[in-house]
Length: 125
Image (tube, rainbow, N blue to C red; front, side, top):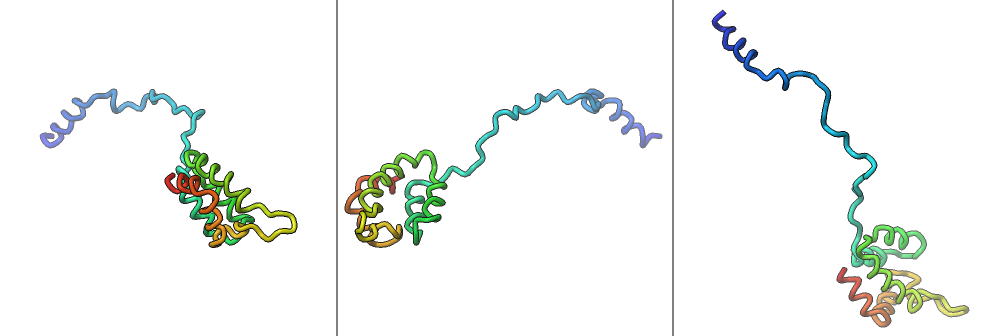
């Protein structure tokens, strides 16, 4: 009996409210607002590097652009708006544009020559 006495004392000293299985009064989480758990997205520089690794513009380039972050989009758009007419537009009956293959040296040279300021801004972001 003496051995049980300390345990009985502990049982009596416990707060019964904490041991009860009453209702959970924590508020339910608000499921109408879901946090954005997607990765932050690629920088303009990372997107440009991805595009430079493409051998054609068919599927690879759009996949690279899909990874672009919202913050980097204005810099990429400025570069693309310069490079598209200067380096990627085919003239009727003319040769293939310099950026028919985005990773080619001819494409890089064309962008460096025609869109240097836009490229510099993109690479910084």
